[in-house]
Length: 137
Image 1: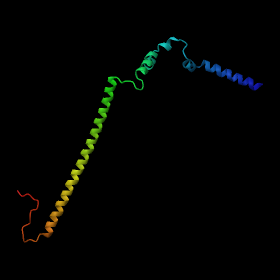
Image 2: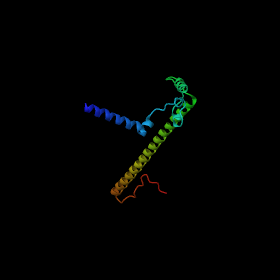
Image 3: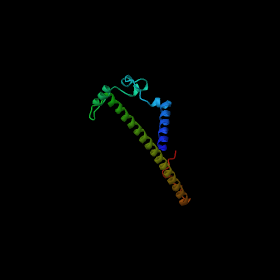
């Protein structure tokens, strides 16, 4: 019988402590009904009236027609994405063209060097060297 008395006493102490704590007041729901109809402060920006909310969903059903402003905004987003994509691909194309041009120039230089080496090796000294593909001024 003593353990039930101890348990009831402990529950009463906890109840008294909770009722006197300041956190209990901040967690309590206010008793005035006027604040639920007309919120103040930041709640006024978050919540909208019931009529406005139902009109919002009625206006924008699943197959509802978009307003011209929404269509224009979406079109601007699509055009901006296309422009970014075009610039990206143009940059990649320029990089590849620069790479290909450098490779082509290096190949031409290697070919010219090997051709000159071949001419020097095969030159017999009897005839003047022929100027293949050389433009003399």
